[in-house]
Structures are given as structure tokens and as C-alpha cells.
Length: 145
Ligand SMILES: Nc1nc2c([nH]c(=O)n2[C@H]2C[C@H](O)[C@@H](COP(=O)(O)OP(=O)(O)OP(=O)(O)O)O2)c(=O)[nH]1
Image (cartoon, rainbow, N blue to C red; front, side, top):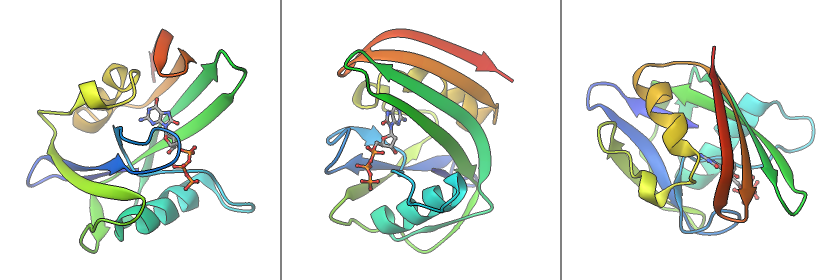
């Protein structure tokens, strides 16, 4: 989930403290609970990780990851221009309000540079397919819709 403050031209990112991608900067998110939709999951994970409620999230993309060890992952990307609450640090994440003009790609997953800027600034929709060997991206392919 990427929450944007349009007036300040900032996006609410996290420094993830534990789990897959610990230490990296990312949007808040996580795995779906049984019976939950993708958007319900993204809103819940954002509440759990930052204490903030995203309002009117819009689906902007799909990420498909294939890892060489066999792990396969599908991630839905949402963008919300409104929210309720102030972001706070939790056991899972440190909040980082970040300028849209200075996204910290060198501290993010390697694929993010291929879709995040266009998604947040130009509000484009996409499907991305990536292969990874652990942290190393082996291939990338993004279709803009
Ligand atoms: N931006 C971006 N996010 C990614 C990439 N790969 C990747 O797993 N993610 C996201 C999807 C998830 O939100 C998170 C991975 O965490 P996860 O689903 O294993 O679970 P978690 O530890 O955060 O969560 P949970 O136990 O709270 O459900 O990172 C990537 O390449 N780019």
C-alpha cells in the first residue's frame, strides 16, 4: 500500500524491521488472511505496521515474482491519496514520509525502480513479472496498461 500526501508530494514508506525483506524500504503490506480480499489485506497490514488507515485505495498493479528456489509470489499494489491517523513506529516497521522526487531505490527491492515512480507520479497501471535469485533480480518485464 502506498499512501500519498499530494499537497506535500510525499509517499509513506516503511523501513521493514522483520520478515521477508527486513531492512529494506518498501510500502506496507503482507500476506492475506483466509477469507480476506487483497485490498482488505493491504488496509489491515498498513494499520498493523503503521497505525494508519488508507482511505479509498485504488488498485494500480500486480507483481509476479518467481524465485529460483521455487518460491512464487503474487503482490497487488494499491495507492491511496487519503488516510486517517498519524504514522507511528511499530515492532514491524519504521515510517518514512519520502519525497516523490527522491524515492530511495538503492534501499528497495531491485524491481521497484521499474514501476514505482511511474505508478506514484503518473498514476499508471501495470503488470510486472520478475525473476529473483534471493535478493538479486535476474529478469524484469513490465507491461503498462
Ligand atoms: N515493492 C516490493 N515489494 C515486495 C517485493 N517483494 C516482496 O515480497 N514484496 C513485498 C510483498 C509483501 O508486502 C512483503 C513481503 O512480506 P511477506 O508477504 O512475506 O510478509 P510479511 O513478513 O511482511 O508479512 P506478514 O507476516 O505480516 O503477512 O514485501 C518487491 O520486489 N517489491
